[in-house]
Image 1 (cartoon, rainbow over the protein chains, first blue to last red):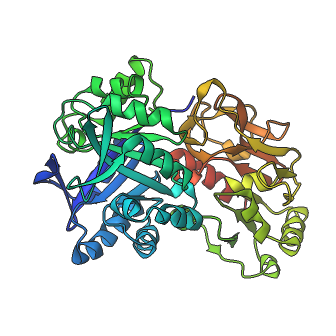
Image 2 (cartoon, one colour; image 1 turned 60 degrees about the vertical axis):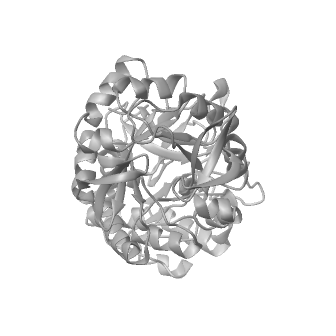
Length: 251
Length: 198
């Protein structure tokens, strides 16, 4: 049976892992390669490196970070943040990324999804969607949650799939960094609408939050950052808990 | 020297890295003739079966000759599917036909999602050098929609609403549907087993 994936996210700025609350107020969490090693030992299923500043000089540092992390890992590695063009994607892939994640750039020019899928295959293209509840819809935001994109998350996920996306990384802006639980309602709505995997993100605080997102949230994978970074929960401990709850995991 | 055939079906950085880590000497064959010096051949690839069309009759002839000479061949993901007669995904492109059967799309029985993406377990059906040191139930990383049928050549099956061939082997021809280069220690052990046979 297909396992539910646990993905650790390394929010990276200038070669260091940082983590904010509600996308603001960053504090440092350490060396990305060292963290990647630890997660790999603990049995993480996949890693995401998210470049949260994506300025030009940070981009060069990011290539080194991707390379350093990829050298030691034989599990899937995705890179996102600041991937606006095919050239940005190519740089990430050449540095060792197996998948690239596009967000704002795909909203601005959805044909980028298709171009990347044709070049690297759909399995290498993640469309990241940042959204929050708005009435009975889920409003999509661009530019790290700063700008309303005037799109609904469910409809945008469907379009992304049709354009060649291989996975959806769905982040709840309301829950990000709050440790109050994943937005299961939004995750389930998107997961029902597409046949590609949906990775839930934003709000992981307890072991049972993961149970919830894999059951009522219908997520295929769950992503978290701070809960792992500060060693509040080891990946192994989380997976043992999930298995006890009848959720298939890789242990 | 192991020939890694790059026919532009996906990025091979991870595959190269895994073989390099295991100390294998890889080279990029520039033409079918360049396969003469290969001790073994690896055909990787992800994506649409039509991509295998880049490997024309001349490539296929050289690869078949290599196999006939008793040297090892490993297909990874799309490369495994190409070992078979063909695929429903692109019926106009024949496979190598070294293994019999036609690849088909997973049905998604029971409401399961297709593509099949993530870690799933290997159920080993018979002993084989390619699975030496691998425990049945070990998990590996998949990302695909099409599969090869379970036949006498199947060494391990995986279930996703239905059983399909996860590892195949017939003589010196082997294939894996998953990505050993992204499957942690289990994947590296399988690649090591292949290299040991070279």
